[in-house]
Image (tube, rainbow, N blue to C red; front, side, top):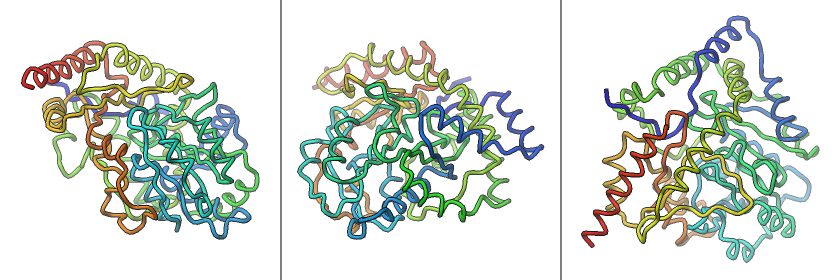
Length: 406
């Protein structure tokens, strides 16, 4: 039978599934334990668990706005190439988007452009750390401090990654983590705010206590998702959900409305199980990412993303630039079963859903270039040496054919 590899994911082990079932039968609440594990792991004083990462970010931005002397600050600096949920969170928080271009070689901010931005109305800068590769976090923290704005360190795709020996998600005023189904570790959904700022924590807590939890209907739907994820993430079965177009697997969509709810008791046992073995999960991702890094030979039409010297990525996926549009399209279509995919087909400035909500609309060449060139390679536990070799051969074959024709 032909295997079909998912682009991303963290498989749920049978023991984890059984533990999840038992905890729910006994109505055991593992959310306080998750908070303690996160506090101990990342040396943070306060953590708050939400149903989604975008819900967590929305409430965090609203809370930053409520800190003293922020009445006139209503702009958030966002990378022009990042997850669409970031832009949606800013707008759902009642704030405005100010875009800054990225360096297409590193996927981090274009620092020359960032330092020249007007900061008078800026509330905060949001990092990206896409695909588990840390941004220039020391520099971003320094720019935020010198400009009198907050730094939100978005580690949704970078759980357990490090920069300068520090955990990604712990830079700046507050960090965010995600347990969504496509992230480094998963409980199907989930988001976390972590901070050491007591004033910010008090504001978050005052809102958090009044948040709703998932309804019975939502909990039942999530239960179905857990079981489906457990069964169908396996490459022997993933072809089935991947063949159903209405599921939109692997497609990134912009969501206008974000609901903010407390994290579900139902899902907490899964998150706790994966937290306890997250180091081993990260180890496999790092191993696969480093294999791609050392074995993919660059040419004039395909390039690897440059990593910072002090960064230790945990590769959610491994990004590669294919500079010819037709070649990239053919490669994606023909190699889809290997989990090779496009993450974000548009840069933020090109999203039609947010036209009119960007305070500095225009061209952002680095971000647009990446949206037209980037592909990502899978790094999860199902990717063994044979699969990596096959993926590398496919890339080399298409690149060689292109070079010979041109």
